[in-house]
Amino acid sequence: MPRRLILVPTEMERRFLAPILDPAMPQDCRLALCGFGPVAAAARTAQLLAEQAPERVLLVGIAGSLDDRLAVGAAYHFDQVACYGIGAGSGGDFIPAETLGWHQWPGDTGGTSPPSEGQRNDPSNDPIGDLIACPPGVSDDRGRAGLLLTVCAAAACAEDVRLRKQTFPAAMAEDMEGFAVAFACRLRGVPVDLVRGISNVAGDRDKSRWQVAAAVESAGRLALQIMAEAL
Image (cartoon, rainbow, N blue to C red; front, side):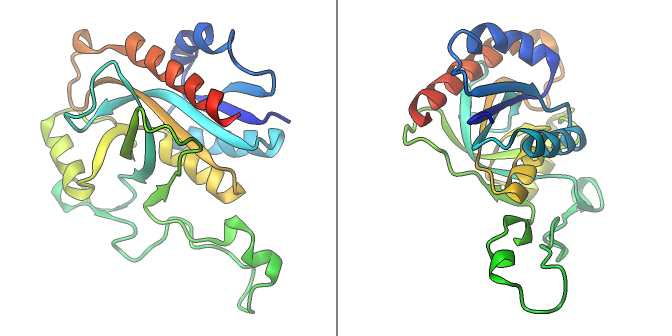
């Protein structure tokens, strides 16, 4: 049973991370792919949690900046993650699920009778809305950021960014897996750390300006710092 499970969305990110993580990673840690996008990441994370039963999960990969305070090429450790895209409408008419009155997971006690003590202590019975808190497992504030926004499709232009910030003004970066991984972990009662290297400014699709290698390498170094303090 690994003490910590390190998840990486894509093979490209894993290729950049392996030379950084493999030489320094404790023997009781495991590195695995969670898949690209929220659907694959949620399903694969749930599978890995069931198979490996880790004590803590660490998601490492790249993200696009939604806030000028996050530097391209640097890495950050996020305290919260929200989901953009589940709800009603699109563009300026989009309404998130929780605003509509729907939890993405309502909780399930198995019936209408009062929950037993075991059910009350089961994390899968707790409702989950559009935002999940991910308290860091370390006290070091270096690289700490606030809200990570998980989307189904990366922002393609400045208007996409504006609409996302209109719905989630506190969002500092966007990714495509954080909420899914945090969701699966919350259902299992496993704490999760979200580390993202900023590869680009969200909405900028000109990859000549992206810094993917620097972002992934920064994320790997930050992941090692987190593991060194937490383990």
